[in-house]
Length: 112
Length: 115
Image (cartoon, rainbow over all chains, first blue to last red; front, side, top):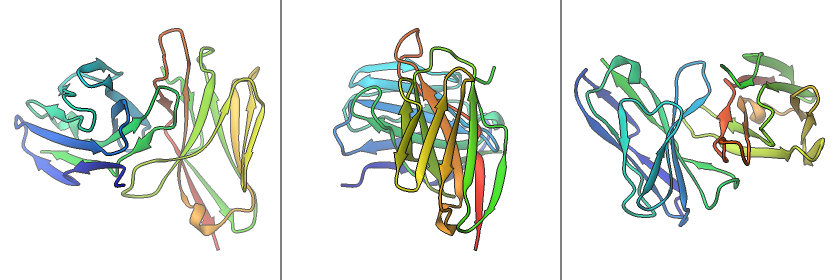
């Protein structure tokens, strides 16, 4: 049981490039989340999903897109990367709202 | 507008002593509070939680106290151990009113426990 896995661990992007951050969970959780953590700051919710095919915006969705075609996977897409998107990105999941969220190890992204 | 505030960026304590981490919130709609612990290069892990109908919850060395009238909660770690050295995040959510189980995090407090 791997829990929540994220790839890649680290990536450097040039301004204007795009990429997809992968997130997979093997716990059959309905809810999945994407957060970003900037230095010295708390985690901010980017997008979340309550089940396959259903996604919604969080606090800071601009510059990102998500999809949820399966229960297991919740990829985060960055189009036209900007330096302001330099951050650590965490994916999380839980079986239902209000249950404890389980976090992945994070993806460190540097946009230069 | 920061709805969950951890005003101490860092805290240093001696091994065996008590660590007290504080958290204040402004949103009256929050009715569930959680503490997460984060080691470097890892994701946050859940530590302990408390609902607004309680004023204390205990789990081994960890106790969370909630003062709803003051909109303040604290995490007590007794006795502190070097392995407790990590960043601690306070988080909260409300069941209704639009916040709908979405976690709001504080900025975190770096706890260092010195041997």
